[in-house]
Picture 1 (cartoon, helix red, strand yellow):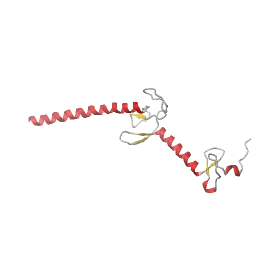
Picture 2: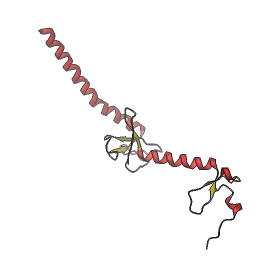
Picture 3: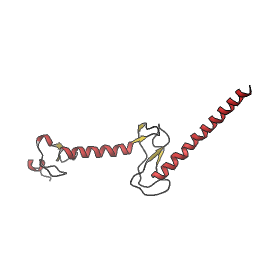
Length: 140
């Protein structure tokens, strides 16, 4: 049967071991009610928030921030198969972030360029149409 922690054991930060005062004592997220210091508390919150945002946050090409559920993270590029610690998430539907893949930086850059070519074709069509209209005006 677990014993209750003495007040002395509860007045030491479970992470870094420094002695805690009343204003420097934060409850940890553990069930056994150990305490941590202010600095360790904020480090744990920042780590949690960073992980939460990595799993749910996406930026569009125009740097618009979107929050939603991504596909499960893997440490392997889904296009070339290279193993990486950091993989950008490439999505193509702003309404459903599950429509995306984890790519290494090299593959992500190539995909962004490839998708940009579709827009370049649109611009080329626009320039041809513009020239056509200008030519019609010159002929009349």
